[in-house]
Amino acid sequence: MSRSGGGRGGVSGRGGRSGGGRGASGGGISFSGREIRDLLAAWLALGVAFTLFLDPALVQDALAGSVDMAGIAAVFGVALLTVGVGFLLHELAHKVVAVRFGQVAAFRADYGMLFLAIMAGLAGFLFAAPGAVVHRGRITERENGLISVAGPVTNLGLAALFLALARGGPGILGVIGSQGLAINLLLAGFNMIPFGPLDGRKVLSWSLPVYLLVAIPSIGLALAVFVL
Image (cartoon, rainbow, N blue to C red; front, top):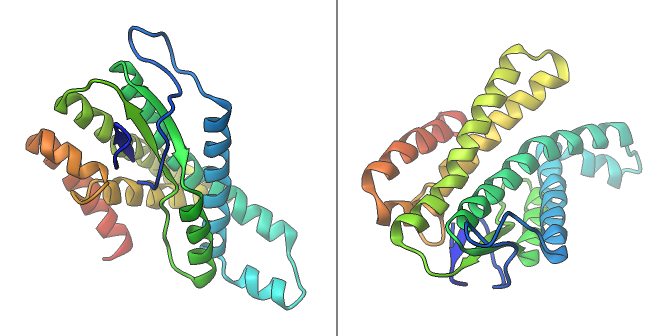
């Protein structure tokens, strides 16, 4: 998810306005200490949330006084490598394109939403709105659309990589591949919904053909995996 000018943007929650880097005229990508902390906090919190969602028996075992640390570590590690990587690269794609267009851009975590994500995992359902890349500066509608579409396109690319891993990888590699495929299709499809702060709304307001080109496979594949 991305936000222009401190307003709302495309898979995540809130954000401040201070920047993390400038674009074509200002040099390369840079990260403030706060931004690194926010990215790390969001990555770990999503890992915890998806661990609880994927293996609710872990909580029951812990309440019963039987904690399988090896099992927890395995599920948590898979979550970090799938949803964590998908989320991080989605947000970084927004930032890279925004900086390319001369924007001041930085990821800002929404700690309230991260807490809700963990509580949702405990309750047994899926919810994640970890934050957003906030960017500001003069920008055209086309540039804003390209910034927004960068995240979902990145998730589609990651889904293709995880598909190859799922098909060819035995054991734990196959598990990582299958989960990474599903999560990245979900991230791409959800973000391309043309509603509210999601990426799809800004892409659609810029270009209907580009929106359809990305949204049809993103939303269609996400529905195929999670509904059909």
